Image (cartoon, rainbow, N blue to C red):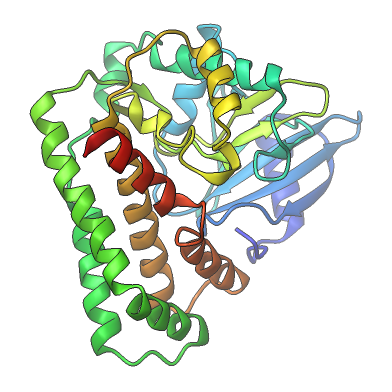
Length: 335
C-alpha cells in the first residue's frame, strides 16, 4: 500500500503496547508494495529495538503467519517468523485490522538490490528447504492445493470484453482500457497458451510440494550484511515446484543464466518440467492482468496505487520482461 490508511498513529502505538507488551515510541508508515489491503510500518521502541508491523484488512488467512513460524522452527533458512502476542498468538487485532509484528531487518527488496553469488546460492538452498519441508497434516488441510483453475483466464477475457464496450472516464482506467485494446492480440495469445499448457500439465499429474506461491524480487529482502529473507506468505500452496521456480529466469531482474546456474547449485539436482515452467510463467502474467484490471476497472479507489498498478500491468509487455521470457521457454522447451 502506497497511501497511509486513515488510522491514527496513537492507536497503532497503543495496540502494539497492549498486545505485545512493548513500549513503542514512534510508528512510521512505509509506502511499500501494491497490496491495497496491507499497510506496513516501522515501530521503534524505547530500548532502541525496531519492529516491522503489518496491518492487514479484508480477508485474513492465518496460514500466512502459521506457516513461516513452522518453517523457522524446522530450521528452514531465510524465514522471518512473526512474533507472538502476550497471549501467545501470532497476530493481534485493531478494529478491522489484524496486527502482525516481526523483527525489523534493514534491507532492500530484490528490485532495488542485486543478489551476490553467495546470496543466489543461499536463495536456492532456502527455496529447496521450503519445497522439502514436512507439513503437518493439520496444516496441510488448511493449505490450498493446485486445482489449475480457469478463474484468472476467464477474468481476463471478461475484462477484454469490457474495455471494448465500456467508456471509462477515470484517467488510469481510461489509459488501461486503451492499452488493452492496443494489445488485444498479444493478450489473447498469452491466455490461449496458458489454457493449452494448463491442459497438458494436468495430464501429467505432477508432484505437489509446499510452495511460497508468490516468489518474485519484491518478496526477497536482502540485508546489507549478507543474509536474504523470503517474505510475504499470503499465497502458500501445495503445487508443482515449478510454480515457485518459474520466476527464476522468468523476470528481467532474475534472467541472468550465470546467476540461475548458481541458484540451482544451491537448490540441488532437480528435473524441471518445461511444460509446467511455461504454464506458470504465462499464468502468473494472466493473474497479474486480472488483478490489476479488477483494481483499476471496477473501482476508482486506490489513489497513488492506481498509477503504480498501471505501470506494473504495462511492464509485462516490455522487451525482456514477463511475456518475452514466458514465450522463450514456450518456444525452446515446449514446442
